[in-house]
Image 1 (cartoon, rainbow, N blue to C red):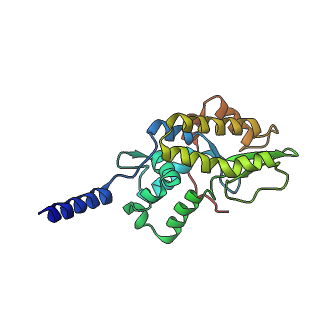
Image 2 (tube, helix red, strand yellow; image 1 turned 60 degrees about the vertical axis):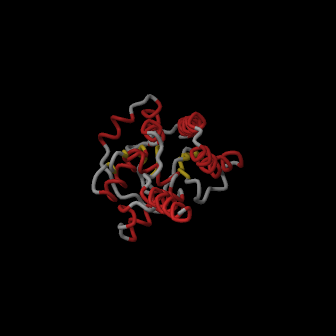
Image 3 (cartoon, rainbow, N blue to C red; image 1 turned 180 degrees about the vertical axis):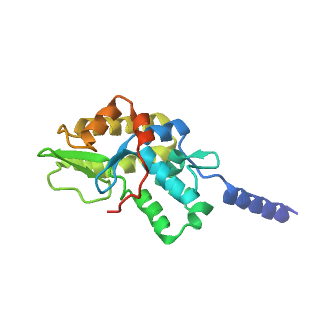
Length: 213
């Protein structure tokens, strides 16, 4: 009898595990993270929220997934990859779309770190090649901040996660450069971002396919 109950308990536990909802950042925190700007690898700088809406719509056919917002799905793939990789909309995706998911998780498409040199703005990803002109302190920050942020997310340290996100936003505002360019201008986008007009930007930008490194 005891063995039967133990077996039943294990089976029920396994069932709960298999059907458990994937973990995600709180809606407000996911939205805050997606206020960061990202370079698309070609010529445009957009809020991550645009990237999130585009990717989730491509994968799910709509800009949400159950009770999850696009920003929650997007950040879930970044920080809770093992949970989300088992979801049907990813498992059933074609190889190209699964590659896009993998590239997001790996950080390859997260070109969110601006560096200005000779009035030229270059955007770096945490796992990509970084120019030798970037000093050691900035190079270390670019390469390590997502690893540290991920650890705080998994540990559930909400206040520390908020602080990391705010610091990344400040980093973009501080190091996004100062030379005005023809549209679309990273400087203009960063300036608008710094005065909290990202909602207006998001409504006007048409989603596009994101270039790979």
